[in-house]
Image (cartoon, rainbow, N blue to C red; front, side):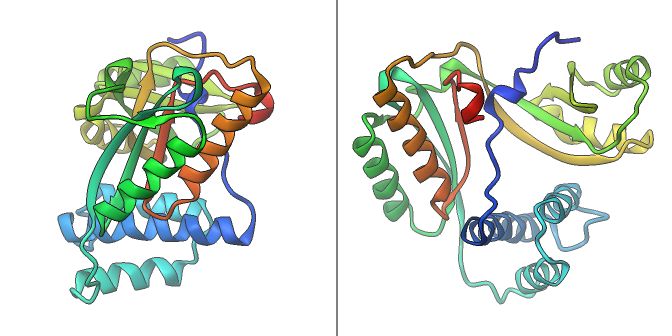
Length: 245
């Protein structure tokens, strides 16, 4: 069992303003739309959709919005065709950054991201330029509180999980990325409440920024990336100060 949280080092702060919430709704909506097209509109048969609905609700997306997106996508009324693209680059002082995007216009997205990296002292790289510094893992966050940690650890191993992390009473199970869905389903069958299940890039090393200007530029780079509607997730190996997390 890990003595520290690898996952907490790449958690992103959630937006609280109306504008940020609207962007979150847009991002989750795209994920749901793609998921419905790939796996169908029934959350009982589409585990990933079930997780996305839970994720949307945890972000306070109204139920009617969720239902409308699913119905629209299932009926073929959503004419947008999104594709998954992973971008890699370096921020100030060599901070490695991986950006996952869902876009209907890759030229627009690439142009936006290149502009952000250039503006804040970094550069957008080629595929593989930074991903070797990360390990791809499945991350399952449980919604239960007050669990028996020893029993959970045993169950997690029997279900195929690799590691268990606790943060303020809530637990995160780490898996091989390819085993994510199987482990997720096995834990749910044992009665655990799954709050989210997703694949993440875990940094193997970290970069510390001590220059105030570099810290400011890196913070602005992350803010601009996360504000972009096409960007779904941002992973990096910056060892962020506590006040930035």
